[in-house]
Image (cartoon, rainbow, N blue to C red; front, side):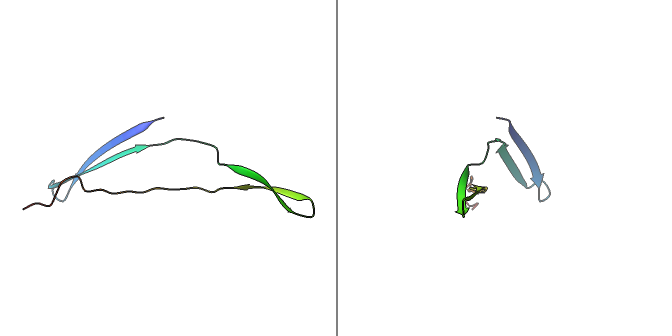
Length: 61
């Protein structure tokens, strides 16, 4: 699984932004669903995206 790391300063070099990510390719879950009348179609679960943010350093005094 490929990971990536990117650092970038902003606000006139007063703050640092850090991005850590990973890209993982998997096949979606699919079901063969009876639509009625004997007709069946594949239906998938969809896509889920999770975005989080956490404070790393406490408030400055």
